[in-house]
Every structure is written in C-alpha cells, then in structure tokens.
Image (tube, rainbow, N blue to C red; front, side):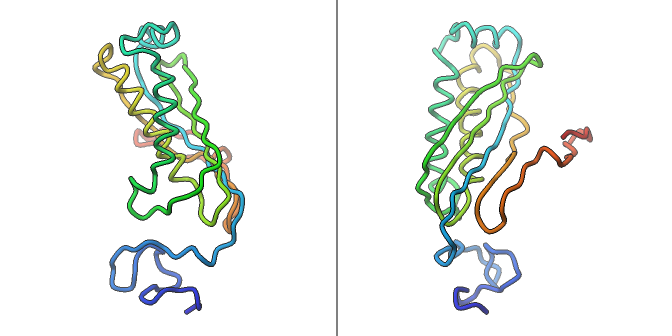
Length: 180
C-alpha cells in the first residue's frame, strides 16, 4: 500500500469504493496540479417550429439559449454540490454553445477548464445536462414532446491519464446504430 493510500483503500480496486464496500471521496492530495479541460455534449430534440421560435427570439419565456447558457455555466460551478463524490474545483473557464440542426434538435456543447489535481469531465457533463434541462424548461410550453438525449464526454486533456478524444472511436447507441 502506498503512503498516500488512506486506510481501508485497496490499490488496484475501484477508486471510490473502500475494502468494506462503502463509497468514499478519493484522496487527491498527492496528485500533481495540471491544466485540465473536458468537453461534453447533449441534445434537445424539438420541432422545426420551435427551432424557428428560438432563433427569432419568439419563445414565450424569453431568450431560451441565453437562459440555457447561464444555467450550464452555473451547473458546472455547482457540480461538487450535486454529485456526491466530486471534489470542489477552481474552475477557470466554462463555455456553453449551441448548434441548431436541421434534424430538429439543438446540440449543446460545454467545455470546462481548470488547473488542479482532478479532471473536469463531471463539470462538463453537469454543464450540458443543466443547460439541456433549462432549454427544455424554456420550450416545454410550446413543445410537450421535447426530449433530451445522448449526453456524453467528447474529449478531455490533462492529468496522469493524458488526453483522449471520442472522435476516433465508434460507439453503439441504445438503438444499435454505430456512430463516430
């Protein structure tokens, strides 16, 4: 056992589970500070008519994308309060962007940056999920059948495990479709 392994931890096992099976917050005090970044995406599916309302500022509740962007930023900043075993992080930057697609959907992209001892994947996922929920709330009055799908991390960099990007990998979604 390493001098940095807390009592009850078992090296080579799940990092958030102690030997007795109970969950705990991982000790990251011995990890080196590095610049870290993660990008995630989610989709809100709606109708062509609602997309037109969003782009023309015609939504009954106001500027749906502005509200969703602020919600996403706030969500990233509150991740450690929402996800029980996440560490509070000094977030350096959060960007939340939207792509309105021809496929009657809004793609939400969030990128989170920090300089710290643990990654920001959960903050990026929380940003896109919070933005998606806020966007859904803004459009539900005009589209009762809107849905949120396909939330995932697209890329991360920094830390001991280095960088990776989902683009070169293929994934099978629940419907059995392969997508890059």
